Image 1 (tube, one colour):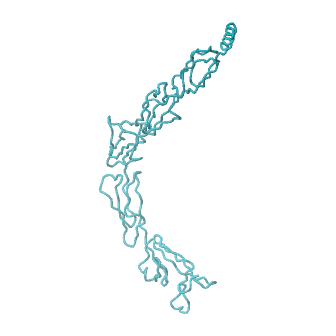
Image 2: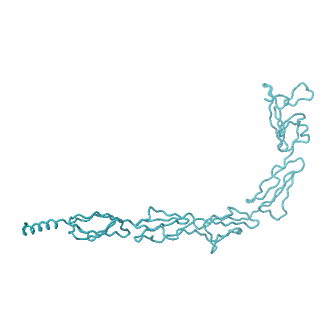
Image 3: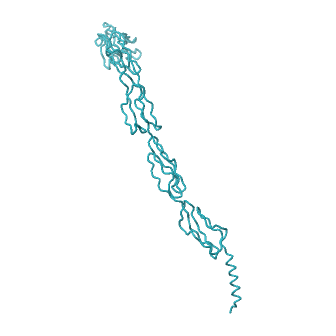
Length: 345
């Protein structure tokens, strides 16, 4: 039989042993705080984990009691960040982000021709909402385009308050007798202004000069203006060198200055030549002369190789030079062979 004194002594020793097993400072949990937080705890004391603002508790207990063993239970608590709602697609712009979790920030930008109506960035708050509110991309607008002097608007479709949005165009035209310098179309830019406007100037051309051996016709007006036309022609045996019709251009000049060129007399009495790809007898084809600009090819002999080749001759304003290599034989020299009858080199 155990004596009462032994039992009392054993209980005292056990109490002393148990009383010495305090719990240490609890483990840290990321993004959480402990209340109360001390370096040690007696058995039976309680602690509570609280997730910091912006974080939510996941996967474990929040309140723990220091056991007699002095060892805290395994803590599986996790504090995860709040997630803000999907920011959506920014129409006519872009949203840049890494995640939508607290406390991350997203930024906004607009496409060319649009501007941010609102904040450039927003942060996911502790409550899981975006702050400030998300912006929108509004189109850049331009004021009404100024109309250049001596011009009118021929095409323009404004919005409310007569303003235009980015990319819209205004088309101008000049009043009669005025010509346009620059682009007739102006565009509303991404900076809210118009591209360079055209300029309308009055343009006059001098009366066209009648060419020698020819004539010119033009409108019976006190002055000839931009886009007015004149027509030219030549007398018999003369050829017009240049276009038949010319126009007064925007620089106050005529588009061309035609002239009349004289025809040529052909001194060769007998020769076969190439004209426009065919063999012809020059004395028959050009018995009335050769017009300015017409060209023929004469046959010449290569005596060393005993073959023939061609050289060109052209009528230039009354002058026609026969190639020096060409030899015209007399009709009495029947035994001589003309170059056009010799095989080509």
